[in-house]
Each structure stands twice: as C-alpha cells, then as structure tokens.
Image (cartoon, rainbow, N blue to C red; front, side):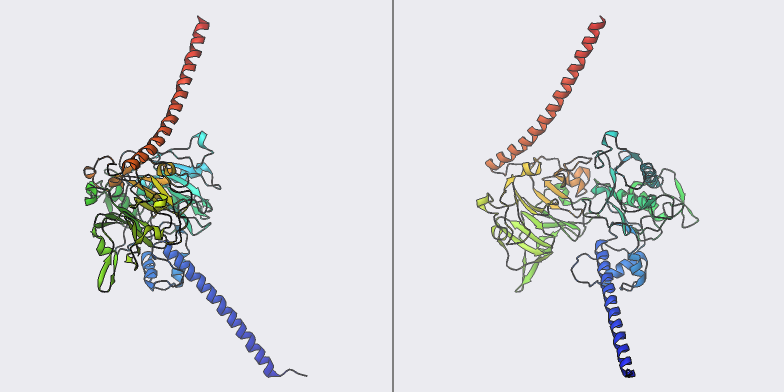
Amino acid sequence: MAASPHLHICLILINNNNNDNNNNNNNLIDNNNRLFYAKEFLTRFGYIKTNDSSLYIPPSAVRAFQRFVGLNRTGLIDELTWQKMREPRCGNKDLRRIQRRKRFILQGSRWPANGPLTFRIVKYPTTFPQQFVDTELTKALTLWSSSSNLEFEHRKLKKSNDFQPNHLDRKTDIRISFEIGDHGDTEPFDGPGNVLGHAFFPQYGGDAHFDNDEYWTSKSTEGVNLFQVAAHEFGHSLGLEHSNKPEAIMAPFFKGYTPNFTLQEDDIRAIQALYGGKPSKSFSSPLSNNIETYQAVAKQMAPSVKSSNRISPLCLDPKFDAIIVIDDDTYIFKDTLVYRRSKLAMDYDYPKAIRDVFGRWEGGIWQTLPDHIDTALVWPNQNIFFFKGKHYWKTVRFQLQAGYPRLISDGFRGLDEQHFFTGRLDAAFVYSRDNQTYFVKDAMVWRLNMNVEFAGTIDIDYPQFVARWLHIGEKITSALQWINGRTYFFSYENYYRYDHINHHVEDSYPTYPRSISEWWLQCEQEQVPTTSPDYSHISRWKRAALIFESNLTNIDTIKSNNGRQRSKDNFFLLNILIFMIIITYYL
C-alpha cells in the first residue's frame, strides 16, 4: 500500500522542527558560553568591580571596554567586541578610571634614582634557549633605558644556584620568571594564548612573570615574540599602566611580530614623565615629522616608590586603628576619620568622618559605626566587620547591617575569656596561605576554623604566641590581605610584607620592616616621624610575654650567627696551624 503524501509532508515537518530545536539549543549554549567568558574577561581586567553568578553584563562595562580599545560603543557583545576579547594580551588590568583623553597613564610609583636597576631571571622557559632569553629580555629593557634616564644591570644566577630556580637575591630589583598556571600570586596563567604575562608595579616589587606554556619565539611570525611582550611587561615593572593608544607598546593586546619594534611617542612621554630623559637627547616622533626634545625636568617627574611629596595629616602620626580594602581602594581608619588610598595615591577627597561613609537610615535616624575602632576585617564576600572592645559591627561594603553591635564571642565562637581573649583586638585578617581568619591581641593569635559568622569557631590549637607563629618580634597593630594577594603586618610606624608560601618575612631590598609613611602614605621625608614603639600601654604580664617571645626569636638568630662565627674562627685557626707546619718544615 502506497504511503500517503500527507504522511511524508508531516514527517518532513517534524524532522525540520527537530533540527531547528537542536540548532536553537546549540545557539543558546554558544551564546551563554560567550556571555560567561565576556563577563569573566570584563571582571578580570577591571571593567566590572563586583561579580555574581548571573550572565548579566552591565552595558556600561561593555561600553567602557569598547571605548578603551577604540571600538564603536554599542554596549553589546557584538562580533568585533568578541573578537577583541579573544586576542592574546597582558594579564594586568586596564584602567580603573577611564579618561577622556587618549594618553599614557602613570601608575603612581617609580624606582628611586640611586643607581642602576638590577634584574635577574630566576626561572627560564623550558622550550626557549637561555642565551636567547637573556638577549631578548636585555633588548626589551634597553628600549626603555634608551629613551630615559634609566640604567639596568643583569645579575645572572651563580653556578651554585642553577638548580634553584626560585633563588632570590634580596638586592635584585626586578625578578623575572616563566611560570605555569597557578604560581602563587593570585593571577594564574591560562595555557597557550589569551594571557601572555603580567608584571607588578615598583611599589609591589616590580617582578615580571611570563606564561611558560606559550610558544616563545624571536624574529618570527610564528608563536609569541618574547622581545615585544617583555618590553610591554617591563613597562609595568617601571610604573606604567596600560595605554588606550593602540600603537603604543603599553596597549594591552599583542599585535603579532612587528619588525623594527620600538617605543612610540606615547611610551616615550610616559617613561620620561617618570624618570626624565637622556640629557640633550632628542628623538624623531614615529607619528609625525617633528623633532621633539625631552629634558629631565624634576617638576614633571612622577613620585618615586618611597615618596610623592604629598603632605597628609597621617604623615605626622602614621599609627592608625584599622586598614581594609574595598573595590581595590585602601581605607585607613584613625580616630574619627577614614582616609582612602587608590593604587595611584592618597585621595584628595578624604579624610572624611567615619559616620559620613559607613551607615544606614533606620526610622529616620542615621545609624553608623563608632569612632576609635580597634580593628576591622574584610571577607571575600564583601562582609566587613568592625571591632571595638568586646563588640563588633557588620557592613556589606558601606551599608551598615541591622541587628548590630553584637558580642564578639557570639559571632566568632571561642574568642572569649575562656580562651584568654578579654577584648580590644589589635588585628583581624584573612591570611594568604590558607585563606582562614586570624585574630591578634597583644602577644596572642587565634584562628577561626571557617569564615562563617556565628558558625566559625576558634581552632583547638589556639591561641598561640604571635612571635612563634609569625616570626615577627614586634607587636602587631594591624594586618590585611591586600589586592596583590600578599599579607601585610603593621607595627606602629612600620610594616612587613609576608611570604605566605615559605611563612617568613619576605626577602626584599630595601629590607623589612619599612616605613608606613614613606611606602604606604608616600609622605615627604621630613614629615616622617622617627619615634620608637611604645609598649607602656600594655599590661605588665602581657608586655613580659611579648618581650619574652621577641627575645626568644632574637636569641635564636644570635645563636645561629654565633655558630657561623665560630665556624669561621675555627677555619681561620686551622689555616694558621697549617701555615706554621709548612714554615717549620722548610726551616
């Protein structure tokens, strides 16, 4: 029996509908994947400050990115925008505050002018010969020194350290390494393509990291040109932000191999604004036929890492009550005021009264935080806790939450008198090594077993002595995990940066502790006080415990030094004995 033609038509229609549904599902999946990637991209590079689990992308964030890279500002993830996001690029953030003019941007810190900057390659790539790496990286630094008053010195690894790629010389300024994936600085690499490298600004150490998974090449259209990428990353190491001029070396995207690669006018203006130009040195602008001469004018030079010549009330007395980070800005609390510091410098709109920044309306009354807080704590979920005496207050960013103040022992169980806590915390922070919360009071430290209010309890092994756990003999007056993933400990006018991987004060030059006034507040040198820590306000038994722990740490150091000295003395006496035997033999 012949099939009905109507049946054939129905089967064809059903089959077409199934194909259409499959295509629609695939398109929906592709679109969701694109939105997920785009949101992660915009968050990572500074266009979205707070991320959530939804796929919604604020059009303002898309327009900001399109404006920065010179695309039509549609606010939509169109094809051109999507393709731009997929290009290989630097891992550093783009501008946090987009400016109208297209020009270079200075990060706000520079290296002090006290001799040549030193650099060391502490870990070489596995697929590119070392001698070529040395050549390409030296060429990249020479680009910057040829147009500025900078000089560089290459410090090579000694033979005894060839098998210790992470060996650090504390007197090396810029350390260079080729890393894979998560390498301990909260900015993991993502394999071939996408992010090629990143670097830290002078204030944060100046180190430069490159993705070891990339196919690094030299003078070839294949792979990724190491010389060009290194020149860009070293710009960050010297204090430059990304430029929104596409032809500039400091533009964030890799352009592919470019013969005759050199600094552009925007790059030269930027580096000379930081370090001055070569005396009587001129250059021909690649963008015009004019000859421009750039002299080293002190007034045009940006502030060094240590000093910005800006006067802040905090400079006269840098001891503060608490320090936290909100949206990459640092907030410093002292008495009744709060100061704000961006990545660039102290904010001129501050200080402000604490009550004017943190609070909420309730029944027509403005509820706010108390003045003279003891310390503050920020969790990754943007919950912020402010402590005073035996009580604490909670905000979500700047919004004060209802139902506070509460007893510290209620919200953080075990932080009570039974565990030797009597109120007035010195510091509270999330430690970079394990991302757990720690509380410090005088010579004692407590650890919370989970970062959950009301559910977290103090670990059974705590409290411990601060000096034994932290290996810092001075009293800790504040602490925080900063935006670079490092934990910083403050002690009156000084501070320490901590190596959370090896669990000791970080090896660096200048050494720690460093002055808060010079390095955090960027005060003028004459504004920096030189008073020593005052322990008179600490009770007798607590002061004795603190001094005991400090002396114990110093004794260990002295014993170690004495042991090394005795070894040297014994070796010297042995040489004298051998010399006397030889003289006696010949006589």
